[in-house]
Image (tube, rainbow, N blue to C red; front, top):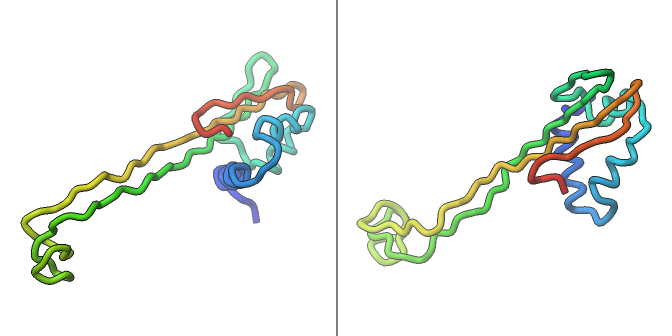
Length: 131
């Protein structure tokens, strides 16, 4: 069974965030000199690829959602369905406490490997989630 590139990169990024060890830069630098097949084996089929002037570029995209939960503060909700006709009831009522809404940010990291003669010679990282 083979993992999709996005799942593999997500797992790679998640594990790298939790584990105390080498940085993403250091781990990816270990692929310099590796054949193209090693990238395909470990990361799957690239999301984008192009060859320009004999240099092949393989790009892997990782996107994720960073969700900060909102907060509904204490307030007068009015007569509610679950709390009865007193302060702190839940459900429809004359007043609603909007609180602080949840925040959702999309974060991403694109890893592009540069290959010459079928071997990795360099890589670049671009995005706000390349740690």
